[in-house]
Length: 436
Image (tube, helix red, strand yellow):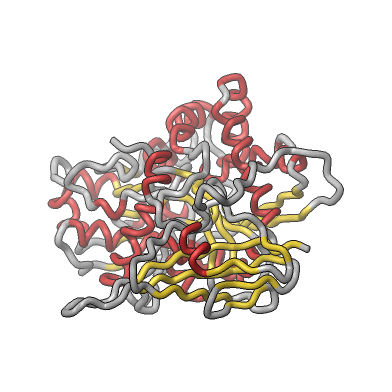
């Protein structure tokens, strides 16, 4: 099996991957701070996926990287998008499914992977499972659920996309009812008890609370018929994608590359802290405090969930590239009928980057294409475009630096059209530092 580290370098047509002649940037190191950058993260601090940032705040790791981190509590993907657009948060956690829809509303850049497995879990109401699903295969389960009442956090978000992917993978179409508002274990439990919801997609610690009892001594309310984090061969491959990634609006990222790099380095140290056995008791205590679960549940959850964090932050582009066409074919309204690839979103801070350009100097289009590993064949044309015309000027021959800042540029290579064939196009996006 190919490792994620290997895949990051096998996927060579990527943003930020440079030729051997370009300089390599070193990882951000904790250092004495001359200024502190306030950064608000849109997330749910109670969600186990927020463990790394909760640790960063509790252990003052953010301060080591000249950051003052705060959490903007959000309940759904739509609330995260609203926070990013309004500027009440600067960075956010989101699933790939979230970023696909958000990018259609406002250009987004994802710069780190937090979790290597799907974020959501499926939980089915216990009596519904016992009566209709027990012993059934994945395909049989989805056939039954296609006519059921399925829980969502909100419409057109990651949970609806995942339900649609699961149904589609089993050859089913949704004929039941989507029930919104599945935001916490308590609200899901109330819906299960009232039988207004048959199954839901949710996240930890909601999953554990529903499976083991929402309160101390309470009876379990749900059953997990299969595990999205441990998919079987009969489950659709498109659902097996990284469940939590870190990003921001492209506008903010372009203006705050150094801050984003520091945030990424902070997450590296926080995850290393969480995985260090000597810190296990503190991690469990933090889960109990933030997620409001019992100590035994927190121990069980930590032992399992710590394995899912990405220690390097390298982005699994293969998953992004598989999901874009799926959205285009199945949920075109969410992505406004566009088929996205990782090149539209991802600027992987774990990869090497093109050397900064001085004001008044230029990089020609051939050098940029080579640096971004875009193959240029005989007769190919290279086009360079930018969304930051104040910082850099795109010309027919390349890019010229105009003022200090960050140049957001896209390089497109179009092959000469052969007789009877369509012309092939490849592109990659990068952020180029402009210095004096």
